[in-house]
Length: 239
Image 1 (cartoon, rainbow, N blue to C red):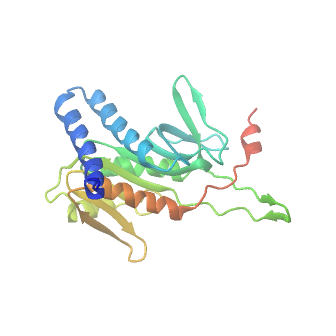
Image 2 (image 1 turned 135 degrees about the vertical axis):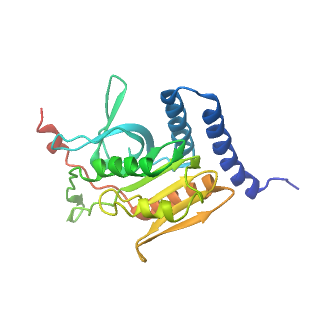
Image 3 (image 1 turned 120 degrees about the vertical axis):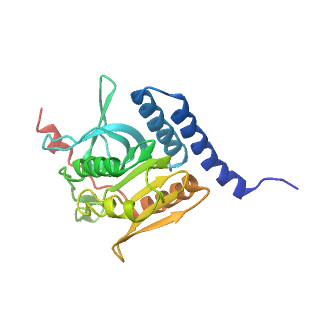
């Protein structure tokens, strides 16, 4: 008889995230070092648990017209169908077509962080994305419609009381266009998602918020489908 426990395994994913974020919060005094530590924890947890078709990195996003996003803390992108990832002096540049999701990672969320995250998300979503017809044995399929890019925010704490209440909802509603935050995790309290059917945010409290968020994100990515076929020649035109 084995003593494995799925609830314990899932709970320990959250415990690991919460403990490591708390250590960074209490130990690292320098804001830049604290920020790097926070980002690295989320990068590692997503890289560990997301399916292998997804890559996770800190990066800029670039389009075929030569436009660049702001630097994004966490970019979830494709490496199975998208051929380009540019690296220069340890800076990563990901083509817009390959992006599934982008996140801003902070120790705590407040009005400024929500606005900052919305602006970062918008800087990615406004980029141009190509989509080519897909060849097959009988001809070609029409170009694949562009998938919606998921935008989110990741944190340990909230500066509001309650942590996930009307103050947070009001700030989230401030930008429901290109800067819309679809999903967020406040590890000490819960996570939230935007429900397009009712056009509202749902707040879900959980003692295992990081794990619950991770599983919901995987589900969202599954339903996103696959990124479009990138027009490599559009990038080659810059040569």
